[in-house]
Length: 180
Image (cartoon, rainbow, N blue to C red; front, side, top):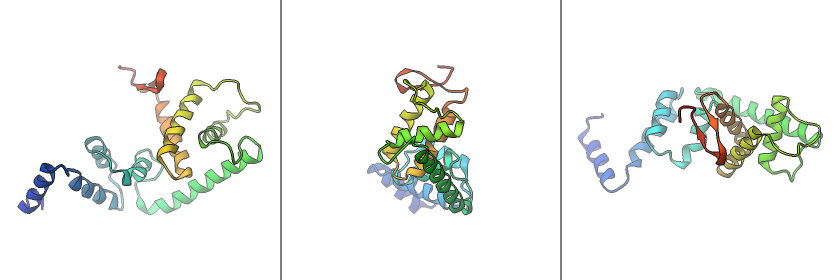
């Protein structure tokens, strides 16, 4: 099927008129329809081609490990994450760390601190650098994502990965590897 002259002509034509993404979108759709999403292929796709906005939330969830590669488990994991999120939010509300007027990034930080066992009885005057980084990540992700629950879990994973030794965070929110 790859050698189909009609398909090659169509691909060539799309590229000539500036619609290179048509074939890429089809490839991504095929990749995401599989029962088990091929993580290596997905990583390769994301590195080589622009990711259509329609697919970004799902792709980020899978790439960051928030959702498993097995699509059969997605529904179960979604329910579990929603329940976990609501439990944390309820606990922080009861303890009066957050309320309905608390900005999402701040709520996410409090949940993060609670998960790490770093939730203070009194508010610190200044945020730790790692908490400042977390707030920055949470602010950007909540601007891009509509789903509050998965925004939190994406923040968690993104922040966790930035804390790995192969990355260091420097001023102005720029991330560099130690080799830079």
